[in-house]
Image: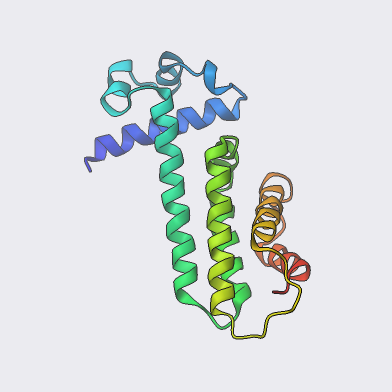
Length: 175
């Protein structure tokens, strides 16, 4: 991709996230307001996106792609220590913290994260060599609660280490 295109899209992304950070609701973000914040003209915006919704959708899809790659990478490796998978995931999420928090308000990303975690849990269970308990937490409930814990951590206690959060999750769920 042309470096100018990359730079322009990055400026638009940062301006969009900044407006969300300032608490401006999506319906109040206009192309004019966005391009002013990005110090670009409207024509430049329309070279890359149809409208604000198209930009929002693109940013969510870009983040979803990055998340999918990370989840795939973690499930393919299958390390000896299962907790190391979760630590690596949390480290990645911590690096993406602000973008995740700002885009998580859109239901589409929340559902996508849930689906990724559910698949992650199911893959780990299918690869587990230990004998499963007679009573086990239903995977959808486990996925929803882990995503809830992760989002709470990212929003409020992100200073806690990924290792600490992994230990806390492990204490809650041992299957």
